[in-house]
Structures are given as structure tokens and as C-alpha cells.
Image 1 (cartoon, helix red, strand yellow):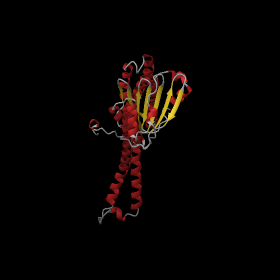
Image 2 (cartoon, helix red, strand yellow):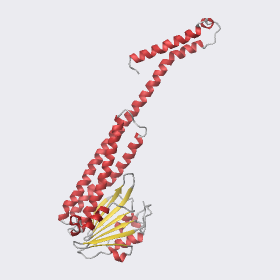
Image 3 (cartoon, helix red, strand yellow):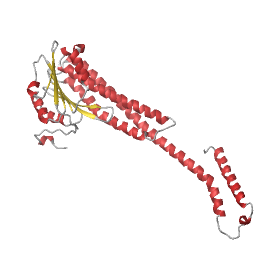
Image 4 (tube, helix red, strand yellow):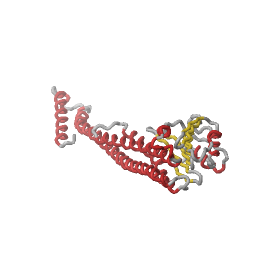
Length: 339
């Protein structure tokens, strides 16, 4: 990783090809206005009585991202963190804004970099690519659900974070349910050959979710101690609700860790049992054929004077003897319950 303190140039280190575009919603208790476009003059902060939610999709246009951040007095290091898709999740409280780095996790192993900046009367959301995660929030603002337009930017931040936490809850529950299905399969009589790879896939998802949730769970309470003009006391219960969801996901993660450990042990145990069963079957076959191989070896010697060579009934007698010996060994093994 390059030292970002030695560079004045901003660079996006992701690989998505989403063209940077901006959506803006300005609202108060009585009005709402939506606009789109990439002209930065139209995206400067509005009056203190209006809350602005600006959604930026795509981070390829670093010049536009830098212009938006400058318009809202966001410092250079935070702008670098917005463009760094590999940055770990965190929560920071600055004098004029709160800054959150998060991830949107898909049902598969994909992640999307998300950043939220909340000021006194604005919220900026930066998404690495096109996302529908916050569409319900936009609908709620449009329809003024629970009088959301009468509330301030800190409440909007709590709603957005609640949506992100809901995404983590869904992913955590999906991992837990999948692990339960795998456990049921392992405890059954038939175990698929792909169970091991499925366990590893869920382990990777578990590790990704843990890396995202645990830092947010530890740092999110900082917002309750932010500057008074940024987070009002009336918003603390809503932030507490988000923290409760993060705590719940952390508990699900801990349960998944224990389940994964037991599943790995169970899978290894089942594999060992199957191996032992195969070895037992091979041993039984070998045990039956060892005396037969001995007899064939004796009669296969080319000595001139062998009584059985001149005996008229030697061949059928040899077959009869080998069959009797084979069934006798089989009966002994069956009686001792070795097969």
C-alpha cells in the first residue's frame, strides 16, 4: 500500500466501471426537490432549514468527487478514504461532520464500498457502483413516511445506517441458515462430496462479514458523543437501535464461528469414518482371498512329483476347497460383526 501522506493526487483503486453520477434530494417539513447532474455548483449546501441528501454512485471521476468534498469542507484525508475501496470500516467524528466507512455485502461473496458523511444539514453517500440499497429510504422521504422530512440530517443518517445494518442481519442469517443445512446433511446418512468446499465458502463469507461488522460495532457508539449540532439527543435512541442491530449481527457471527468449528470437526470425523469403512471392506476382501491365494500359489509350483497333478478329480476338488474356505472365512467375519 502506498503512503497516502506523500501524495497530493487522489486516485480510485477499485475496478468497477460505473460512471460517476449524482442524485440530490432537498427537503423540509413542507417541500421536497429532487435533481440530478454532475455540475458541482448545483450541489452546494442549501439553507440551514433544508436537509440535503446527495447520493454519489461510482467513484471513477476523482475530480468530481474532490469537488463535492471541497464544497462540503471535507478534508483531503477523508476524501482519500472515500476513494480507497480497501479501507477498513470505521466511524469518525469531526468538528463539522461525521464520517462512516461501511460495506454493502451481497448474498454471494461480493462487497461494495460505501461511505457516509453527515453534517449539520446534509448527508452524502458514496457508493462504489450503482446500488438499490437506499431506494426504500428515498421512497420514504418522497412519501414523508413517519414525517421523515420534518427531521434533521442526523436522523437521516440513522435511517441509512439502519438499512446497512439490516443488510448485515440478512447476510448473517443467510450464513447461519446455510450452516444449519450443512449440519443436517453431515448428520444424515448421505454426505455430498462438495460439503467441504461449501463449508469453506461459508467460512469466507463469515470472515468478510466479521471484518465489516466488528469495527462498526465497536466504533459506532462514538456518534452519541459527537458535537451537539451534529447529533441531537433526540436522535440517540435511533442510533441506539442501529447499535442494537450491529450487536445482534455480532452475536450471529459468534454463533457462526462456533458452528463452523463444529462442522469442520464433524466433516473431518465423517471423512475418517468413510475412510475406515473403505479400509475395512478392503481388509475383508483381502482376508477372504489370502488363503485362496496361498492355495493357488502352492498348486502353481512346477514340481514334477505333485500328487494332485495326476489326480482325476484334482481340479474340481481344488475349486470346492477354495469355495469352502472362502465361505468359512466370510461366516467367521460375519459372526464377529466385522462386516
